[in-house]
Amino acid sequence: MNAFFFDAFPFEYHTSNGYKIDFITEDRQGKYEIIQVVWDMSDYETVERETRALRQAEKELGFPGKLLDCTKYLQQFASDNVAK
Image (cartoon, rainbow, N blue to C red; front, side, top):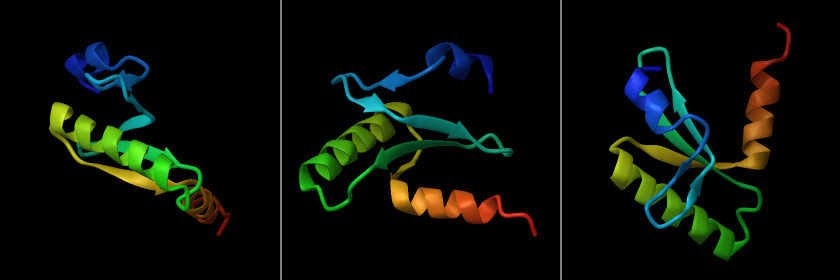
């Protein structure tokens, strides 16, 4: 992580409207991504809130993000970490 990014986001990020961002990641090529986790995709209010936070953070930070469903995340994590 570069020094600017670390200084700006040492542990967590809140948008200018106070929305909390769950994760900001950096891949091996130095590209950043915002990740908002949604526990229950059938809960309309939660999805709207997380989407609103994500869109505002994308606008403020200038890089993309995605909503991540906990179930799908756990399935992907398990499949990525299964011994082959």
